[in-house]
Length: 166
Image (cartoon, rainbow, N blue to C red; front, side):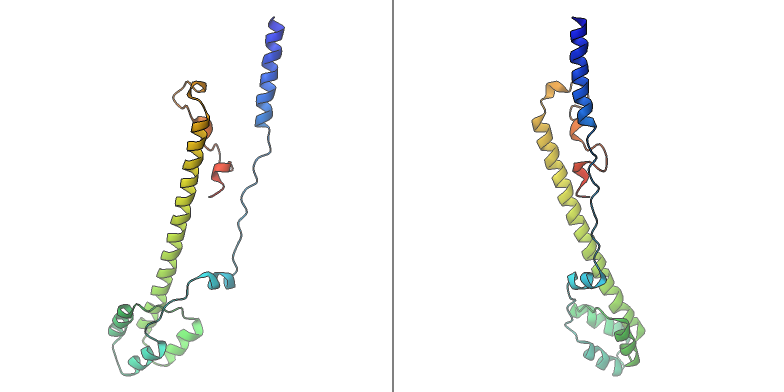
């Protein structure tokens, strides 16, 4: 009788170990965007106040602070290339105005990127929560008589399927 018990125990242990010996999941692949793809995917800034108007106001002698105030008030954003910045500086646009134009667009891009990261993170956390609810609903409570009844539902490592969205 004892040998039958040992045989059953060995068979159960073999089945358990077979489940643990699976191939680890492949890490997620990160697809990189080229500079052209990134520029095409970014929304184009809106300029209610054209660059020619800024040059004209600068030539009239309007102070930099007032020009910056008008740009802010109009809600204009500019994505300037290096050659455009040099050209505008050569046409008399104050450096403080150019600095503001570049800094405000850069800030907007970073804010948009941060909002996208937050959106993706929320989607991922919602997905993890959904998978945990599903896992907890599938496992009866009597199988786990400890303080942590749902330990097997939690992702054990970063490579686990729950972590694929990160």
